[in-house]
Amino acid sequence: MSDPTTPLEETEARIARACTIAQRDRDEVTLIAVSKTHPVEAIEPLLEQGHRVFGENRVQEVKEKWPALREAYSDVELHLIGQLQSNKAEDAVALFDCIHSLDRPSLVKALGKAMEKAGKQVPCFLQVNIGDEDQKGGCPIGEVPAMLERAREAGIPVVGLMSIPPFDIEPAPFFALLDKLARENELEARSMGMSSDFETAIMLGATHVRVGTALFGDRG
Image 1: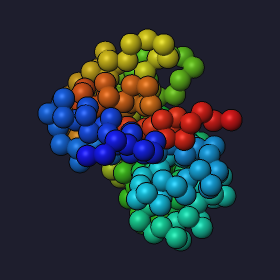
Image 2: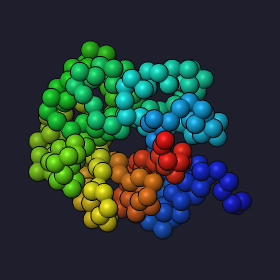
Image 3: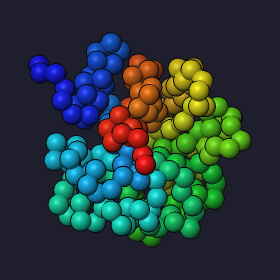
Image 4: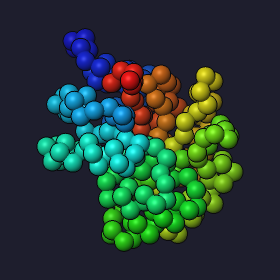
């Protein structure tokens, strides 16, 4: 096998190595290319190389950037990885194929109504405030079972848990805790791990890794 020559090839090689070490199949891990704040010109090379799963933070940015790209590449999957305001729920259901930031009762209510109105079921991750940080979104750990029940009652398909560990602290214990919470609540998916730590996340059960800097470089 030739040495990787593009950021996407290098990232794929890192994921493959981590899966081999963890004795997992490569197809168990979805690479989400975090394209938030990056222009169309930066996204097109990844599309041309065959990548199709991208992560965005804001409804408005998706409206501006993605219509033409999705026309050209109809099999693109867009994942909402940023915080979602309840009043943007209908837009999110219309624009995204997966939502990673379900985190509070008001959003459960808004998304449930939006999905029913649109006749569209969008898979969601429940975001967990895994480090109990005041400044971060996410459901408190102790409220995970109750929030999952609320979501199911609202008709929202919750497929897994998502978290962002505290900055500058070893992430492995937080990844292990999210994996444990997912198993306890019989959820298949774990959205965890970014450019600096996705190998660790994969070894601890990640099914979706959210990688921006390793693919696009630092944002300006």
